[in-house]
Image (cartoon, rainbow, N blue to C red; front, side, top):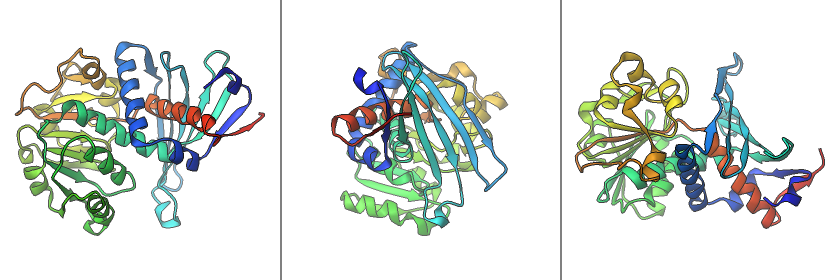
Length: 329
């Protein structure tokens, strides 16, 4: 964003974000910020995430600073499980960007679409760097709002020939099936054991508090992207699977405290040193997958820097395309 645009407050709406940010730009922003984190050029601040005791909602803040990208700010919002019945998205958030040179608020950016597309970009980056090149079957676990974003982004990373999917309520798989059919990829609703037996890449995107996938179901060479666990107590796969896999993450501090690895760390099944940041792979400091039989697992906890990266890109593009409002604060 140019210096002149730092004077005054930019408002970038949800519609503007959808117009200017596509999957490619989100992928690039997330991949770059993971690399920046690994180099020590960017860091996240401690996450605040609490049950507020009203409307069954979880509410919190994710924030950080990227020196390389000059992104400073926070995302405020959370999860309101009753929103779907009201015609609203369960996840609600807004991103605040500040000028790192003087601390002034420079932009308010709608965070709902960006949260979905950056979460999908994170799993896509993990697939690009860790999944076997010959992966043919994609497994989807979960069919909520973010699942279709995950599916679209994942299908661009490998030449998948089939999608298999499971959801607790199988009737909700229609949205995933529609996306697969739109993109010309065969789709099948299956039980979890069959999904694991067939899939070369598995994405979990649920709000589960108990393991949905077991180690003995997973075949050698599978890449798993666990994208739903972002709160203390949540869990999508069993601890034995975490222990058997080579584990990568967006940020180790979050992985061991609120991510999928939290339970395996607590039980002693793995140690913190067993987890590698995906940024290390992107930067060439870790080889990533070492064999076709290795099970790799990405613990995508969702870091604030992802939000700031895509929001900064959205603000810049919205200004360039005349889709940002500007007001005085």
